[in-house]
Amino acid sequence: MDSKHKPNINVSYSYNPLEETLAYSLQKKSVFIGIPKENSFQENRISLTPQAVAVLVNNGNRVVVESNAGIASSFLDNEYSEAGAQIVHSKLEVFKADLILKTAPISTEELELLQKDQIIFSPIHLPSLSKEHLLTYLEKQIIGIALGNIKDEAGNYPIIRSMSQIAGIYAMQIASKYLSNNHQGKGILMGGIAGVPPANVVIIGAGMVGEYAARTALGCGAQVKIFDNNIYRLIRLQRSLGQGVFTSVLDPIQLVKALADADVAIGALKPNKGVVPMVVTESMVEKMKAGAVIIDISIDNGGCFETSSITSHEDPIFLKHDVIHYCVPNMASGVSHTASTAISNILMPLILSCSESVGGSGNFIQHKPGLVEATYAFKGKLTSRILSQKFDIKFTDLKLILASNL
Image (cartoon, rainbow, N blue to C red; front, side, top):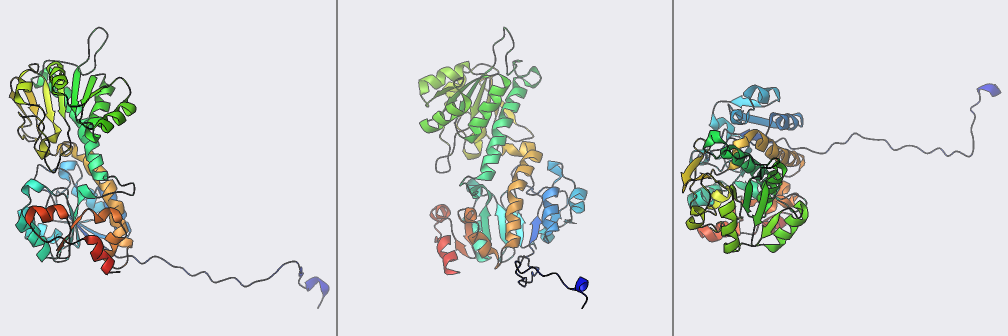
């Protein structure tokens, strides 16, 4: 062979065969998702936005949406259709899905439509929940997951957190509205200007709702006083918001003085064993200014003002002792586009995880520890200790069930 055609081999190199690379993809389980239209509990929200539906469909899942399910949140049927969802006009068709997503509790009408072995993501409303409701879940082997009890990896409750933030911010928008002359108010601007003092805002409760109400009020320029019996929450809030905020434990004398001078009073106490303590008596309300505004965000769990009584989004206020009362449950539903997007941002990744899990719904829950606490019914077993005690139904520890299936 001619030397110029000989291969040039350098002994310093080593020649090893390469491993063959094979294409491998994780096994996915296509999930059939149903989103019904909400018809109860003053509910305007929807669980998934069209953008979230598009992500799920593009990952091989099937989504069925009841016609006009998103209209109250300004999401139209054609947006869901263009995202890849199937639009149906029958609730029965929606409830043929393997997984149902709701932003309101399952209604009596919907209870009859449940299919065996379905997964239901929905809130639980303890005052209206019946034993028959739970027994139907158990009979049909339903996996029931309470939206408000879902935890994230940091141990927080993301949906409750998001709705609390919305309620706190929205409460101050409502307060500004009803302080104006056009809505029976005294014509007070939330933030003062040069030579004119700002509105006085009293917030009862230093949790997430109270914090975001305070942030919004301070942003408007109002003077803010916050009351709570948890000193650690008050310390955290003081550090977060600065020394410009007055904080106090729920001392009745201090509270009476603050309310008498308040233009706005926000009730944002957390429930204790499902009930909010009533800390503002009718006599305290009588001492408030005429035209002052009470917004009882805690009305979902009974309210913390003795004068509070449930109102609706359509007829939100009433006058008592010349004080405007706003006591609408499910306040986040009043800004449903924002609230729906927040819920969708939490649920969509969870559903994607479900489709990527192998071995069915039990495996899905097992690999998402944040769902274990939120699961109150699992394939014929009641897995919520609170519901077990309330309705006298046998309790089964979900962790033991999942461990036995390993």
